[in-house]
Length: 299
Ligand SMILES: Nc1ncnc2c1ncn2[C@@H]1O[C@H](COP(=O)(O)OP(=O)(O)O)[C@@H](O)[C@H]1O
Ligand SMILES: [Mg+2]
Image (tube, rainbow, N blue to C red; front, top):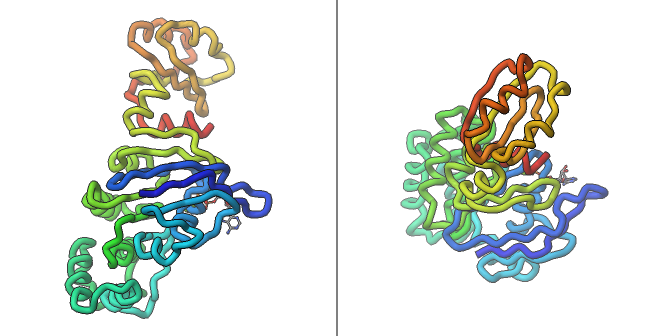
């Protein structure tokens, strides 16, 4: 559905995207995860025909960003990082304005607006002005606006950033509902969100994809089955080589004063803990999360 081919984009000396390649299947929910400044928003703005790349190509449903911008814009619903909503509009009027702009048939538009307001839980605020809405309520209206023309492709840029847990959950639920029916790109730096929602995840850092796969396969690929976490007083006193010498150890990472040791099995755990001796303040084991994958990949 979306094909990104050797995409490059620089802003002055900053290389925001470096030879980016990515394919997104129809009906897939793809997560693009990466730290601030990784290039996520730049990639999305190019797909949405808001920004021109320096080189490379993107097609959406076979249409090219160079030749078919109007067609592509009509196929995509885009929720920007900070949706710019017209403050003086009432919620319903804003949706009507965008519906007409995107050519939603006149006899369908009111029904469509009611349906969307219901979906995002805003029916009771339909006739209130946007400037009376909190960030979470604006985000809901932003989602309704992105969906007004029933686009095939929906792109969310950090949809739950800065929202309270209940609103974040509600928004994750809308995204989940779109799954399978629509092609969705979700940019986020919340790993639990990506893990919960995405079929596949691309880890982007400094304009390049560092890793790609299903959340499960990424967790398996980077780590063994278990992570041993040992917090210590003075990390410099621990010799990593001694830990790496065990057959079951796949890798050792130091994060602050905590060692993260990926293990294939549990058999050497007690011997490994012995190495830390009195240095160990706390010891834990856990299953790997996407967070661990992310940290390893982007360090
Ligand atoms: N309009 C712009 N002008 C100058 N630099 C920009 C512009 N947009 C993005 N950048 C830079 O490009 C890099 C990638 O930014 P962005 O795509 O917004 O990252 P992300 O969305 O992953 O946080 C950053 O270093 C950012 O400062
Ligand atoms: Mg961004």
